[in-house]
Image (cartoon, rainbow, N blue to C red; front, side, top):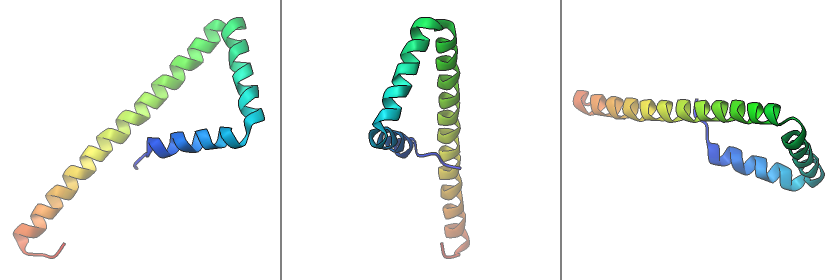
Length: 84
């Protein structure tokens, strides 16, 4: 499972650019939460940062494993004389 974070971010940006009223409403809600329910705002911010960080690490680790596996399979196919 491979996550492409740049595609994900560009998709989110494109969605909010196409739905500007929703983006303004969401920004207003987040600002209200920042001033009225500060603890909840920062709790949600920390939670989302942990989730995004975990997905990023999982993606990087799986990419490294897949690269290593493809190198090993390629080396094994060369050693045995099999085509790729």
